Length: 163
Image (cartoon, rainbow, N blue to C red; front, side, top):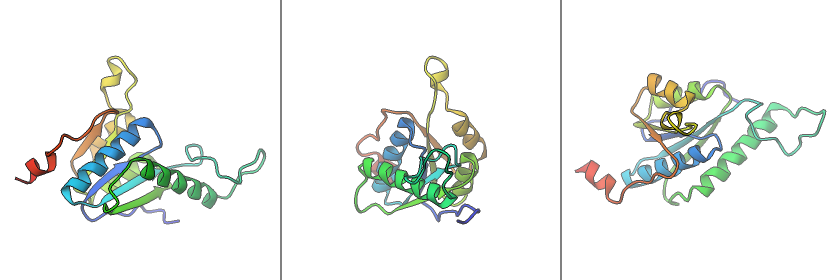
């Protein structure tokens, strides 16, 4: 396990954590990357408390860290499969054992765009990004898009941007 997150060379980076907002961001980022002919890098930062439970987990037994990483990668693969991304879209998946903001900011240094989901709480607070989104907006090395659940790219968007 490499403790230093790698940086992509161009393309779209999206952060996921298994939430509905992250799934919406993944679908949006995948659609944008496909329309723009860009590669997609999907990053999930994790720690033992935030990782999915490994298959070998039992009460009183703490599995080795690589089992947690394997469970994170499996959940990440499930999220990518559920996003309905085009088959021809180049997708790199990464499980980074570090804080989400650290992983996303590091990945943003080589990216054309970083996409995160909005994790607002409803009401006035629901209009704001969550703490990770807010921190990434302040520290990212590339433009950042915050995607709310239920949003979609408009047809013809990529063609208008390229013109």
